[in-house]
Length: 95
Length: 154
Image (cartoon, rainbow over all chains, first blue to last red; front, side, top):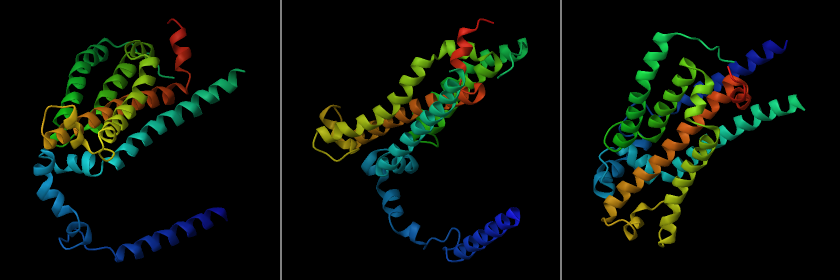
């Protein structure tokens, strides 16, 4: 019974996502919002403003540096969480 | 627990490959400014070299070269370098992570200061990713008991 419930929930969620994907702009459309808002400015000004020829690096590390900082923090947190879980478990077993 | 396999072909190949992998990891990080690459990818390649050491030899061998203490320090040091690079800009009355304020320290123009600021934060990302990947690998493969592995002498 629980299995069928899980299957039902999965199918409904999948159908909702597929329905939502209908509303997305077409793949590779140059007029989609993501392509006309800030992307052209980054592509035009990257070399003048940052001196980096690779626009991916300049967006990752400079324009969206705050995002990348917390990405690094998330990796650090993941490492600390694994340390706490596995080493802590081991510690409890010994005592 | 990783089984200690004693195969001279694997060990010799691993020993030859590790320095090249580490140099390539540094290359991917340094060259991230003008080609695909950067701290995340370079850090993963550097971590892979240590994981290769740990699998081809044994965990003790890898941990002798990259000790637990250094690993823990590196985990924090990377995030510290990243946040510190941003905080220096605040000290010189800029916004957080506004690397052009580094002109107060570096003898360059603001454009190149942003260039070098990006290199600095990529260095932080590289160090953190490398240390955390190695740490997670060692924890998962030994169930968190790799400090005990160091104490046994096999």
